[in-house]
Image (cartoon, rainbow, N blue to C red):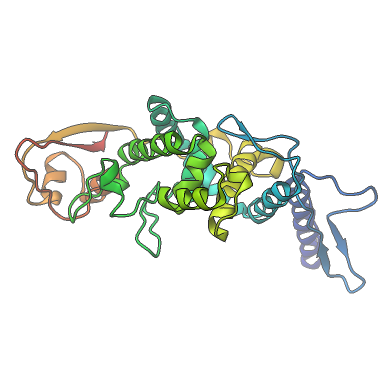
Length: 308
Protein backbone atom coordinates (compact mmCIF):
# COMPACT_ATOMS: atom_id res chain seq x y z
CA UNK A 1 0.00 0.00 0.00
CA UNK A 2 1.37 3.41 -0.97
CA UNK A 3 2.22 5.76 1.95
CA UNK A 4 -0.32 8.37 0.81
CA UNK A 5 -3.12 5.80 0.61
CA UNK A 6 -2.08 4.29 3.94
CA UNK A 7 -2.29 7.74 5.56
CA UNK A 8 -5.78 8.28 4.19
CA UNK A 9 -6.92 4.86 5.45
CA UNK A 10 -5.47 5.53 8.93
CA UNK A 11 -7.09 8.97 8.98
CA UNK A 12 -10.52 7.68 7.99
CA UNK A 13 -10.25 4.79 10.46
CA UNK A 14 -9.48 7.23 13.24
CA UNK A 15 -12.37 9.43 12.19
CA UNK A 16 -14.73 6.45 12.23
CA UNK A 17 -13.53 5.49 15.70
CA UNK A 18 -14.15 9.03 16.91
CA UNK A 19 -17.65 8.92 15.48
CA UNK A 20 -18.40 5.71 17.36
CA UNK A 21 -17.11 7.17 20.63
CA UNK A 22 -19.13 10.34 20.26
CA UNK A 23 -22.27 8.35 19.47
CA UNK A 24 -21.75 6.14 22.49
CA UNK A 25 -21.28 9.13 24.78
CA UNK A 26 -24.80 10.42 24.40
CA UNK A 27 -27.88 8.63 25.69
CA UNK A 28 -30.08 10.78 23.47
CA UNK A 29 -30.34 9.38 19.95
CA UNK A 30 -29.74 11.88 17.12
CA UNK A 31 -32.59 12.71 14.81
CA UNK A 32 -33.07 10.39 11.82
CA UNK A 33 -30.74 11.32 9.01
CA UNK A 34 -28.19 13.03 11.23
CA UNK A 35 -24.74 11.77 12.14
CA UNK A 36 -22.38 12.82 14.94
CA UNK A 37 -19.75 13.86 12.37
CA UNK A 38 -19.86 15.53 8.96
CA UNK A 39 -17.23 16.46 6.39
CA UNK A 40 -17.38 20.03 5.13
CA UNK A 41 -16.75 21.04 1.52
CA UNK A 42 -13.13 21.82 2.30
CA UNK A 43 -12.59 18.37 3.79
CA UNK A 44 -12.59 19.34 7.45
CA UNK A 45 -14.49 17.32 10.04
CA UNK A 46 -17.35 18.95 11.94
CA UNK A 47 -18.31 17.14 15.12
CA UNK A 48 -21.81 17.30 16.58
CA UNK A 49 -22.31 17.14 20.33
CA UNK A 50 -25.62 15.89 21.68
CA UNK A 51 -27.00 16.66 25.12
CA UNK A 52 -27.45 13.63 27.40
CA UNK A 53 -31.04 12.69 28.11
CA UNK A 54 -32.33 13.25 31.63
CA UNK A 55 -33.37 10.13 33.56
CA UNK A 56 -37.09 9.63 34.07
CA UNK A 57 -36.51 9.13 37.80
CA UNK A 58 -33.65 9.47 40.23
CA UNK A 59 -33.08 9.37 43.96
CA UNK A 60 -30.41 10.13 46.51
CA UNK A 61 -30.17 7.62 49.35
CA UNK A 62 -33.76 6.55 48.69
CA UNK A 63 -35.06 10.14 48.70
CA UNK A 64 -36.76 10.93 45.34
CA UNK A 65 -35.48 13.80 43.25
CA UNK A 66 -38.50 15.91 42.12
CA UNK A 67 -37.78 15.74 38.39
CA UNK A 68 -41.32 16.87 37.62
CA UNK A 69 -40.14 20.43 38.42
CA UNK A 70 -38.48 22.46 35.68
CA UNK A 71 -35.98 24.13 38.01
CA UNK A 72 -34.77 20.77 39.31
CA UNK A 73 -34.54 19.30 35.81
CA UNK A 74 -32.49 22.25 34.56
CA UNK A 75 -30.04 22.08 37.47
CA UNK A 76 -29.50 18.37 36.91
CA UNK A 77 -29.24 18.96 33.17
CA UNK A 78 -26.42 21.44 33.73
CA UNK A 79 -24.37 19.01 35.80
CA UNK A 80 -24.96 16.16 33.36
CA UNK A 81 -23.75 18.39 30.52
CA UNK A 82 -20.67 19.51 32.43
CA UNK A 83 -19.66 16.06 33.65
CA UNK A 84 -20.67 13.74 30.81
CA UNK A 85 -17.86 14.87 28.49
CA UNK A 86 -15.02 14.75 31.05
CA UNK A 87 -13.95 11.39 29.68
CA UNK A 88 -10.41 11.22 31.02
CA UNK A 89 -11.43 12.29 34.51
CA UNK A 90 -14.37 9.90 34.68
CA UNK A 91 -12.33 6.96 33.36
CA UNK A 92 -9.68 7.55 36.02
CA UNK A 93 -12.40 7.73 38.69
CA UNK A 94 -13.80 4.40 37.50
CA UNK A 95 -10.33 2.88 37.74
CA UNK A 96 -9.78 4.27 41.24
CA UNK A 97 -13.21 3.03 42.30
CA UNK A 98 -11.87 -0.51 42.02
CA UNK A 99 -9.39 0.26 44.77
CA UNK A 100 -11.35 2.52 47.09
CA UNK A 101 -15.05 1.72 46.68
CA UNK A 102 -14.82 -1.64 48.50
CA UNK A 103 -13.32 0.16 51.52
CA UNK A 104 -15.68 3.15 51.41
CA UNK A 105 -18.78 1.01 50.84
CA UNK A 106 -17.89 -1.26 53.75
CA UNK A 107 -17.39 1.68 56.14
CA UNK A 108 -20.59 3.41 55.01
CA UNK A 109 -22.55 0.22 55.64
CA UNK A 110 -20.88 -0.38 59.01
CA UNK A 111 -21.80 3.14 60.09
CA UNK A 112 -25.40 3.00 58.86
CA UNK A 113 -24.91 5.63 56.15
CA UNK A 114 -26.46 5.10 52.67
CA UNK A 115 -24.22 3.77 49.92
CA UNK A 116 -24.94 6.82 47.73
CA UNK A 117 -22.56 8.86 49.87
CA UNK A 118 -19.67 7.28 48.02
CA UNK A 119 -20.57 9.68 45.20
CA UNK A 120 -20.09 12.58 47.62
CA UNK A 121 -16.51 11.38 47.98
CA UNK A 122 -16.15 11.50 44.20
CA UNK A 123 -17.64 15.01 44.09
CA UNK A 124 -15.17 16.09 46.77
CA UNK A 125 -11.93 14.52 45.59
CA UNK A 126 -12.48 12.26 42.57
CA UNK A 127 -11.06 9.55 44.87
CA UNK A 128 -7.66 11.25 44.80
CA UNK A 129 -6.04 10.52 48.16
CA UNK A 130 -3.61 13.45 47.84
CA UNK A 131 -6.22 16.00 46.76
CA UNK A 132 -5.66 19.38 48.41
CA UNK A 133 -7.91 22.41 47.97
CA UNK A 134 -6.78 26.03 47.91
CA UNK A 135 -8.26 26.56 51.37
CA UNK A 136 -6.60 23.51 52.93
CA UNK A 137 -9.24 20.80 52.67
CA UNK A 138 -7.51 17.47 52.20
CA UNK A 139 -7.79 14.00 50.73
CA UNK A 140 -10.77 11.77 50.08
CA UNK A 141 -13.46 13.62 52.03
CA UNK A 142 -11.83 17.07 51.94
CA UNK A 143 -11.97 17.68 55.67
CA UNK A 144 -10.62 21.00 56.86
CA UNK A 145 -7.80 20.86 59.40
CA UNK A 146 -10.01 22.53 62.00
CA UNK A 147 -13.03 20.29 61.34
CA UNK A 148 -11.42 16.85 61.28
CA UNK A 149 -10.65 16.58 65.02
CA UNK A 150 -14.31 17.26 65.85
CA UNK A 151 -15.15 13.99 64.12
CA UNK A 152 -12.35 11.92 65.60
CA UNK A 153 -9.43 12.54 63.25
CA UNK A 154 -5.90 13.11 64.52
CA UNK A 155 -4.25 15.95 62.64
CA UNK A 156 -0.80 17.32 63.45
CA UNK A 157 2.63 17.76 61.87
CA UNK A 158 3.37 14.04 61.91
CA UNK A 159 -0.05 12.39 61.55
CA UNK A 160 -2.95 13.46 59.37
CA UNK A 161 -5.77 10.94 59.37
CA UNK A 162 -7.63 12.83 56.65
CA UNK A 163 -5.37 10.76 54.36
CA UNK A 164 -6.44 7.46 55.96
CA UNK A 165 -9.40 6.30 53.85
CA UNK A 166 -10.88 4.12 56.61
CA UNK A 167 -10.67 6.67 59.41
CA UNK A 168 -11.66 9.59 57.17
CA UNK A 169 -14.73 7.70 55.94
CA UNK A 170 -15.71 6.89 59.52
CA UNK A 171 -15.35 10.59 60.38
CA UNK A 172 -17.44 11.60 57.36
CA UNK A 173 -20.12 9.13 58.50
CA UNK A 174 -20.23 10.76 61.93
CA UNK A 175 -20.80 14.09 60.21
CA UNK A 176 -23.56 12.79 57.94
CA UNK A 177 -25.44 11.06 60.74
CA UNK A 178 -25.22 14.18 62.86
CA UNK A 179 -26.45 16.34 59.98
CA UNK A 180 -29.23 13.87 59.15
CA UNK A 181 -30.47 14.04 62.74
CA UNK A 182 -30.45 17.83 62.52
CA UNK A 183 -32.01 18.37 59.08
CA UNK A 184 -34.13 15.25 58.70
CA UNK A 185 -32.94 14.09 55.26
CA UNK A 186 -29.82 12.58 53.74
CA UNK A 187 -30.07 15.12 50.92
CA UNK A 188 -29.89 17.95 53.43
CA UNK A 189 -27.00 16.23 55.19
CA UNK A 190 -25.09 15.99 51.90
CA UNK A 191 -25.78 19.64 51.03
CA UNK A 192 -24.61 20.78 54.45
CA UNK A 193 -21.27 19.07 53.83
CA UNK A 194 -20.63 21.81 51.29
CA UNK A 195 -21.86 24.86 53.16
CA UNK A 196 -21.48 23.61 56.73
CA UNK A 197 -24.20 22.73 59.19
CA UNK A 198 -24.32 26.30 60.46
CA UNK A 199 -24.64 27.63 56.92
CA UNK A 200 -27.44 25.20 56.09
CA UNK A 201 -29.23 25.95 59.34
CA UNK A 202 -29.02 29.70 58.72
CA UNK A 203 -30.70 29.24 55.35
CA UNK A 204 -33.33 26.98 56.91
CA UNK A 205 -34.12 29.62 59.51
CA UNK A 206 -34.33 32.48 57.03
CA UNK A 207 -36.22 30.62 54.31
CA UNK A 208 -38.41 28.77 56.85
CA UNK A 209 -37.75 25.47 55.11
CA UNK A 210 -35.48 22.43 55.42
CA UNK A 211 -36.05 20.83 52.00
CA UNK A 212 -32.98 21.30 49.81
CA UNK A 213 -34.93 21.39 46.53
CA UNK A 214 -37.19 24.17 47.89
CA UNK A 215 -34.32 26.40 48.98
CA UNK A 216 -31.77 28.68 47.33
CA UNK A 217 -28.11 28.80 48.36
CA UNK A 218 -24.89 30.37 47.09
CA UNK A 219 -24.06 28.92 43.68
CA UNK A 220 -21.61 26.26 44.87
CA UNK A 221 -24.15 24.70 47.24
CA UNK A 222 -26.95 25.20 44.69
CA UNK A 223 -24.99 22.95 42.33
CA UNK A 224 -23.49 20.56 44.88
CA UNK A 225 -26.21 17.93 45.28
CA UNK A 226 -26.95 18.01 41.55
CA UNK A 227 -23.30 17.34 40.81
CA UNK A 228 -23.46 14.33 43.15
CA UNK A 229 -26.64 13.14 41.40
CA UNK A 230 -25.05 13.58 37.96
CA UNK A 231 -21.98 11.62 39.01
CA UNK A 232 -24.14 8.87 40.45
CA UNK A 233 -26.14 8.59 37.24
CA UNK A 234 -23.18 8.85 34.86
CA UNK A 235 -20.97 6.38 36.69
CA UNK A 236 -23.84 3.95 37.29
CA UNK A 237 -24.49 3.97 33.53
CA UNK A 238 -20.87 4.33 32.46
CA UNK A 239 -21.02 2.02 29.46
CA UNK A 240 -24.02 3.84 28.05
CA UNK A 241 -21.85 6.96 28.04
CA UNK A 242 -18.94 5.25 26.33
CA UNK A 243 -16.96 5.10 29.60
CA UNK A 244 -15.67 1.55 29.48
CA UNK A 245 -13.31 0.23 32.13
CA UNK A 246 -13.19 -3.54 32.26
CA UNK A 247 -12.91 -5.14 35.73
CA UNK A 248 -9.37 -6.30 34.99
CA UNK A 249 -8.38 -2.70 34.17
CA UNK A 250 -9.55 -1.26 37.49
CA UNK A 251 -6.94 -0.53 40.13
CA UNK A 252 -7.02 -3.26 42.72
CA UNK A 253 -7.16 -2.83 46.52
CA UNK A 254 -3.68 -2.83 48.03
CA UNK A 255 -2.98 -6.07 49.87
CA UNK A 256 -1.12 -5.37 53.08
CA UNK A 257 0.10 -6.68 56.40
CA UNK A 258 -0.21 -4.68 59.62
CA UNK A 259 2.56 -3.73 62.03
CA UNK A 260 1.34 -2.29 65.33
CA UNK A 261 3.59 0.40 66.79
CA UNK A 262 3.55 1.59 70.42
CA UNK A 263 6.95 3.33 70.55
CA UNK A 264 8.32 6.41 68.83
CA UNK A 265 9.96 5.84 65.44
CA UNK A 266 12.81 8.30 64.94
CA UNK A 267 13.49 7.43 61.31
CA UNK A 268 10.76 6.06 59.07
CA UNK A 269 13.22 5.01 56.36
CA UNK A 270 15.08 2.78 58.82
CA UNK A 271 11.76 1.46 60.11
CA UNK A 272 10.65 0.58 56.56
CA UNK A 273 13.89 -1.26 55.86
CA UNK A 274 13.56 -3.18 59.13
CA UNK A 275 10.22 -4.39 57.79
CA UNK A 276 11.64 -5.45 54.42
CA UNK A 277 10.19 -2.47 52.59
CA UNK A 278 11.11 1.03 51.43
CA UNK A 279 10.20 4.53 52.51
CA UNK A 280 8.32 4.94 49.21
CA UNK A 281 6.10 1.92 49.89
CA UNK A 282 5.63 3.03 53.49
CA UNK A 283 4.28 6.38 52.27
CA UNK A 284 2.10 4.85 49.55
CA UNK A 285 0.47 2.43 51.99
CA UNK A 286 0.29 5.00 54.82
CA UNK A 287 -0.26 8.46 53.31
CA UNK A 288 -1.40 9.69 56.74
CA UNK A 289 2.25 9.66 57.87
CA UNK A 290 3.27 13.24 57.11
CA UNK A 291 6.81 13.52 58.47
CA UNK A 292 10.07 11.57 58.59
CA UNK A 293 9.38 10.32 62.11
CA UNK A 294 6.43 9.20 64.22
CA UNK A 295 6.09 10.25 67.83
CA UNK A 296 4.05 7.77 69.87
CA UNK A 297 2.67 9.02 73.17
CA UNK A 298 2.34 6.73 76.18
CA UNK A 299 -0.65 4.45 75.78
CA UNK A 300 -1.04 5.29 72.06
CA UNK A 301 -0.77 2.72 69.26
CA UNK A 302 -0.65 3.07 65.49
CA UNK A 303 -1.29 0.44 62.84
CA UNK A 304 1.09 0.75 59.90
CA UNK A 305 0.55 -1.10 56.65
CA UNK A 306 3.23 -2.73 54.50
CA UNK A 307 2.93 -4.58 51.19
CA UNK A 308 1.88 -8.15 51.77
